[in-house]
Length: 192
Image (cartoon, rainbow, N blue to C red; front, top):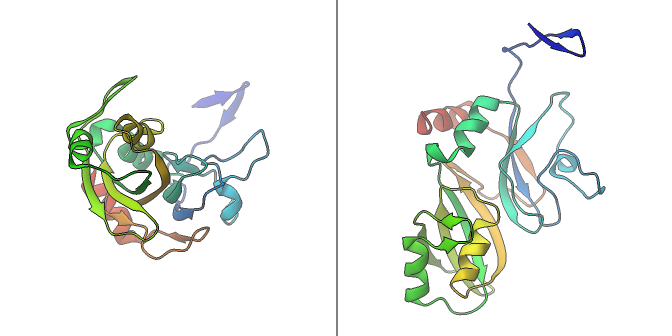
């Protein structure tokens, strides 16, 4: 039995689970509420009557795939570092990446809070500048931006395009869709 302020709280483990994939546009905060009245990702979603949370975060100026759910078990599996869930980002950088700088990212970078795990880094053919596809499984605060800055490649634009087996696809910024049962099962299989 769970009590809050002396009153019994009912907890239903069979509560309907909701899984939403959102293409977060720049300018929105990855939280459910904001005390500074800035727009949040919840402003882009329908009212579900359920208490939903983002799975991980994206900076206000970072775009792309973010999941929103009320499934705490899945959230844990996707965000805890021990599960090594890959996250893929398109990263537009200032400057021309050298093979030496890319190799440093691939081996891991010493940041002020510790060494990063090795990243998978590939050059991408993107319009409007130099672009890299960077895959990491950690989720440190502003990690990609800090890694790139450490090798002299300040990030101009950052967009997450994949988490585990789920890809953003052609979903437009600000649009969302519910995950299919097959996608949810793919997450569960990948993260046992």
